[in-house]
Every structure is written in structure tokens, then in C-alpha cells.
Length: 159
Image (cartoon, rainbow, N blue to C red; front, side, top):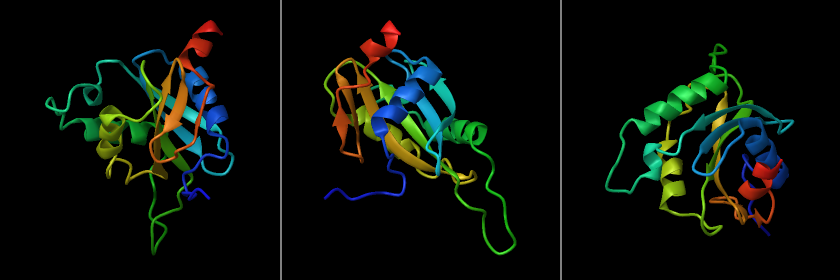
């Protein structure tokens, strides 16, 4: 039995298809998507171009990537307000979708995105969700070990 995390998507293939369709993502793009906790509907996306620092080799670190993700998180999700004795509830998740060529396996690129999210979303009502990779051959998550043949980048470009 697979461990279920709070941020697990009920139907990752459908949500990934919605994220990619909504953002019009293509090969080389990285999409940050806000997904509502209860309905699991995509409520907003932000596309980062192919030259995003996390896509570069590990010997070319970008210390500003976490700051860039924090700004995107604040753009996509409301600020988490103080309710008197604690912070308000979490109402969504921020997923990262890396659109690249190659095998449907997680790589150092996807793990750099996961690491860059550390504390970047703390002022918002959204927790960091998983990092997914979508290729012309299918998709998978790095924490969510499910995978599938659809959606793919090839199918989305044909639409």
C-alpha cells in the first residue's frame, strides 16, 4: 500500500493535464500551479522559461531561486493570516511541473526544485506539493511514485 501524503492528488493525470492545458506549457518550461485542497481544481499557474536556474547543472547554483518561488507562491496563493491564536488554515497546494525531454524518471533537476521550495511558501495559505515531470513519453512524481502514459507533452501540443 502506498503512503498517502496530505498533498497527494486524487487523480494526478487529470490534474497534470489541467495544469499543462491552463498554462500552455511546452518542452523546457517549468509550471508552478496552485491547486485547491478540497476540489483539487487548478486555480492558477505561472510558467517559468526554459533557462530557469534549477534547470542548469548543479555547479551553477542560483541562490535567488527560493526567493523567486516565494514571490510566485505569494502571487498564486493568498497570504496566510493570523487568526488570533494561530495562523489561518491551509487551503491549497503549490505543485511544480517540469516539462522536459527524456525518460520518465526523476532527476537532479526535479530535486533541485523540491529543495528550492524549502520555506518559500510559508506566508501563504498553500503548502508545497510534489514536483512532477512530464515528458513526451508520460509523467511521474518524485514523492508521488505514481506514473502514467498520459498526459504527455506531445499530446498537448496536438490539441
